[in-house]
Length: 93
Image 1: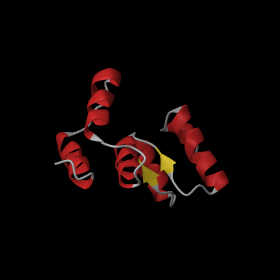
Image 2: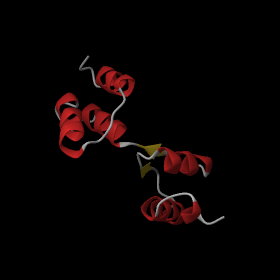
Image 3: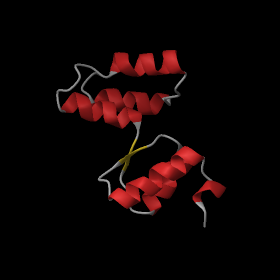
Image 4: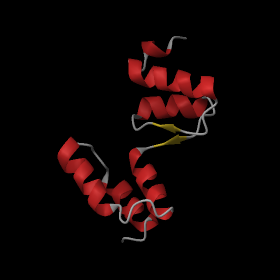
């Protein structure tokens, strides 16, 4: 099956490259692409999860303000439950 039949070109290419490189993880937020990548055994992390990891590692000081900016400046949708969970995991709630 051709990935481009049900994923956009960028998602399809990212998944193919992750498989080719045997990447440890793939950054992807679109549900369809995440679902397919996971079915292929690829670990997937989204932008929110990446920010939480960065906070835990001390790379960034806080997550909340960055998530607010992501939503307001780029019109990135974060479900309220996901926002609450991210803030909890980042010890900001």
